[in-house]
Image 1 (cartoon, helix red, strand yellow):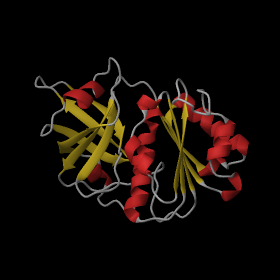
Image 2 (cartoon, helix red, strand yellow; image 1 turned 180 degrees about the vertical axis):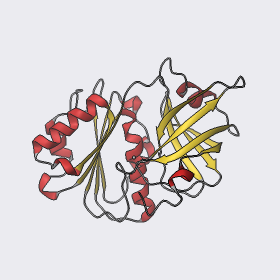
Image 3 (cartoon, helix red, strand yellow; image 1 turned 90 degrees about the horizontal axis):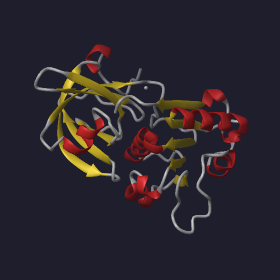
Amino acid sequence: MARAAVSGRLGDRLRWRAARLIERRPESALAYTLVFEVDGWPGHLAGQHVDVRLTAEDGYSTQRSYSLASAPDGDRVELTVQRVEDGEVSPYLAHDLAVGDLVELRGPVGGWFVWRPEQKDPVLLVGGGSGVVPLMAMVRARRAAGSRTPFRLLYSLRTPEDRLYGAELDRGDPGLDTAYLYTRATPSAWRRPAGRITAADLGRDGWPPDFEPAVYVCGPTGFVETAADLLVALGHAQDRIRTERFGPSGG
């Protein structure tokens, strides 16, 4: 997930850096956005991720990968962490890490699943659950760059209470269209019944294949595979579809 826009040699970007938590914002009952200040941060592109390492007093350490949620913003890095039940890292980050505390970050990582402001093709973002995080970084990067590239976001989630970035997405950006589908429970009077993503959803809320959009799909493995297959069946070229998936990792 190389980039002329991101400075620094590969070795420099892949060394561990101290990151101090300076702000935390609730996104849902289980998710928080964590804002870190990272001295010497080399910059990043929307869609990239970082490794986060925690080290206990006895020397035991563990690490997990998290997508960057923020547009490039100097030495500030934002991650949205959703608590994984029985997880080892996410519960601590989401609920115990306090403003002023330090963790270690390594990155940014990745060069395939990225969006650059100089891209002009229409963009279709398809996110499942917390897979919306790197897609939100693309939305924010578009806004920060003043880009007029047309974006469409199709966001699949279990229930309305699971929605991330609700207030920000509700405000909207010119040229950004957002559609939601719910798989377990819907808001009252919601026209689409709860259920998994379908070709009809992608046909209605996505771009027509002949527009040749750049497509980014992120979420759990099953969601990503289903959405990508449906997009190809609708006529989208495989080489226009970029995917990022995640599965159980111990949280």
